[in-house]
Length: 212
Image (cartoon, rainbow, N blue to C red; front, side, top):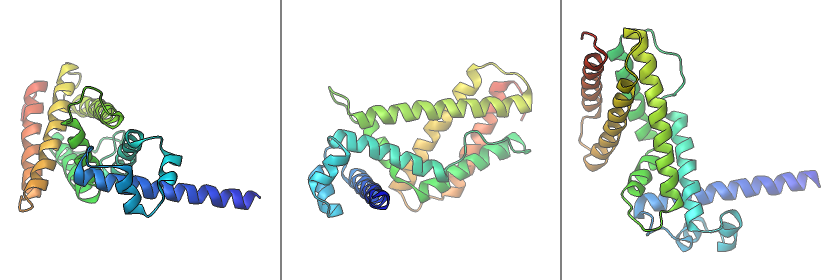
């Protein structure tokens, strides 16, 4: 019995991941409205009953798919709580942008679906959009912490508003970078990344009251 139960759990986990991957692919292609349980059923080959066994409705499925895609992106994205590198501020910012750009290439689904959801305007907000906004707030908080530590190690104590301002711009720059690379495949990503990082480093020095 234990082995049979373990096998069922494993099969259930495999089915759930298969459903999440299919929902994520479809949502990234067609958006929230274009995603349906029927489309996921067709893509996975699983019966609708299997999907409803794991998720009560499409909204819950897409919210879980967003979480799933975020976890995968975090596996290849820059770590939040890593030790600071013994490098000049400009080099640390450049490395962080380069890691994020590389993660786009490896796992673009989270950013694509997330930005689609961010543009959704509905009377009743989908759970997936609510979750995306929450993830952005968590990301901004983590970036604020990172900037605070980087600036403190370079300039000493700074106004708490400075790391928060830089974190907001940092996140917005990543959004723009993703859109640019998706809209134009000929974009020189390395040049854009290094230019953004350089500009943000200069802004950080000025806001923190230091010298370039």
